[in-house]
Structure formats: structure tokens, C-alpha cells
Image (cartoon, rainbow over all chains, first blue to last red; front, side, top):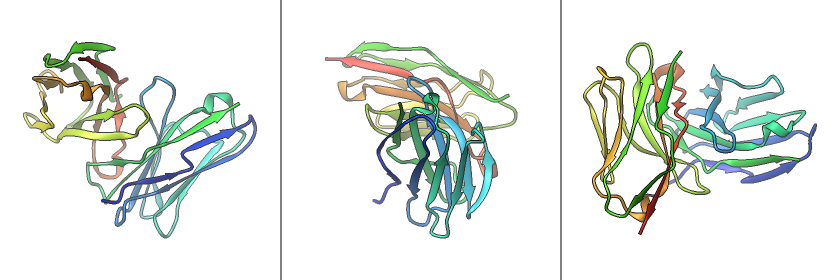
Amino acid sequence: AAGVIQSPRHLIKEKRETATLKCYPIPRHDTVYWYQQGPGQDPQFLISFYEKMQSDKGSIPDRFSAQQFSDYHSELNMSSLELGDSALYFCASTRGDSYEQYFGPGTRLTVT
Amino acid sequence: GNSVTQMEGPVTLSEEAFLTINCTYTATGYPSLFWYVQYPGEGLQLLLKATKADDKGSNKGFEATYRKETTSFHLEKGSVQVSDSAVYFCALSYGGATNKLIFGTGTLLAVQP
């Protein structure tokens, strides 16, 4: 079965650079969630989209922005990167308000 | 606010031992409860869930019962295998428009042969 696809899988950036992370949900899933998992920490909710509209917002820095496109894929844009942004970024998708979220493999971002 | 507390790890067990990982939650209303598993270098996989009080979620020999009176959702398995070695996260959500998951800090399970 098709799963959630995230790209790139690994990304290395320098401080103050920008990064774009992409998420392709499971076909027919219309809801996307972004989570950030720091080293040795639990995943923290950043932002979510339903039918291309932002549906909820968590602890996402103002330097980050995200959107969901007409084909339901989503992109997380991160500017003025800081060392503390180094983390694993997960995308999850679901259909409507279903309880079950399916996670992608994550993008490991390293800021040097 | 809403939060999840789970026992700290690492938990080290011998193969075929009994496993319990404690999880308690603080929440208003009636959240749904989940256990996710994260194998090394991989994403999160839903292990089991329970959406209302007294529900029992089960999968791959793992079980957890939604106990509203004790606000708990402890994970158990009767006989662990080396392949169960992973990090286990307890989580809650409310579904609907605010369906974000709130995770506990994770418990590393190491099963030795």
C-alpha cells in the first residue's frame, strides 16, 4: 500500500539558510500534519492542514511557514535556520477527521 | 493543559519476559489514546488505539486498556521478542478539527536474547 512520502530524507544546511521540506500524503488523504522531533525528544505538533486550509497551529516558529497545495501535498518552509532547528521532521496524513494518522519516514535536518 | 506522562526508560528485558510500560494522561473531556512505535531510523507506526473508556486496543500481542478512572493507558505484552526493541510513545488526541497528537516522552525498550 502507498505510504506517506517525505523529501528529502536528509538535509544539511548552514545557519541563516532556508530549507523546504515536502510531504506527499497517502492518496485520497486530505489532511496533513507536521511534527518536529528533537534529539531524544517526543514529537511536537507544528501545524496541520485540511482541504488546503490551515486547520490548527502548534509551536511553530514565525520563521517557519507551510501550505497545502491543490494536489494535497504540503511544504514546510524554514528560514533563518538556527542550530536548534536540527531535528527530525515528520509529516502525517489522514482522511478527514479520522483518528488514525499515518506517518512518513521523516526528514532529518541538520543545521551547522 | 493536556499532557501525557509515561515511564522513563530504558527498559531492558530478556526475551519472553512480560512487558509493562506505564502511561497516564491529563486531559479535559474524552480523548482518544494511542501507542506508537518507532524502530531505529524509521518513522512512527501506530501500534494500537482506544477511542473510549474501557476500550482495549490490541495488535501484535500488545494490549492497552483505556482506564478513565485512573487516566491510564498502560501498554502490556506477555512475551517480548528481540524484534520488539524500539521506542514506544503514548499519545492522545481529540479527533475532529484539532486532531493533533500529544505525545509522551517515549520509552526505549531493549530486549536481549
